[in-house]
Length: 387
Image (cartoon, rainbow, N blue to C red):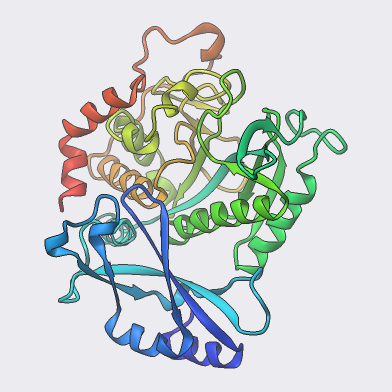
């Protein structure tokens, strides 16, 4: 947790020459601008301007000036860049020219959600992510193919699992950048992998998820491969999920949190599943389409795991194309709704929904267009996005 002064000292002591200022568009895609290290003090004071009209979903050319303000607590040295003339990265908040927060900045939106929950409910949520991805081979021109790197299955080992060394590289790099990996293994699909990391507060968890995807893509490319985070890259194989584990700092509110999130699942499906292929994933290979919860039940869209240390819930419907800042903010406000209205969840579902179905249960939207219409009609969603 560096201050601005400490960051400036670190930059000088570590022979840093370039500073990457990272931010996100409305879809959650990371962008950045590099500045020279000797410009950092001015960036802390005044921000760094950029053309907002060139960023998807931001502003029109007649109102195009926005400013990046680096968050010193997020500084990290990029370990795969040179040791002489080092490169560091910081996440930024986006502001209008007058210094007020930019309303479409998803990182600022998440910060507000965290503050609102603390103020109105006296508690907070911790988040942990499980992000699945595929590794595909490149063709002779260096373009991605749909040929998996291996044909291994769930938790297989080498030599069938050929992703072992790349996962180890990713874990080492995560540690170097201040993120604690916990488990890594081969997933169900051919060439499919998963790496899980330690839970943290909501903002750090979103920052970590963004950093993770960047590291995975970088390490895959350095090994002559392509890392694919799309939700359904192979039609007849398991899709890739972005499983969200969360727990409440006040365990007495666990049931309210669960009920609040469950009650809003359909309304923010558009944000958890933001592409057409997202809806080809739901309903098979442990990606549930049924809006329900169950103890240890991976066929429900929310699972309550069997844990010995704390009560937590796992949201299983989201996929890696989602914007974690926006999704985490929506989850926090849904949890707040559950707490403030003392909502209680329905009884758990204890059967295999993939085998037996759930005729009496509501389901997530089956197309992106349907999900968008539901989100557009949601006063809950509008109230969050327009505040």
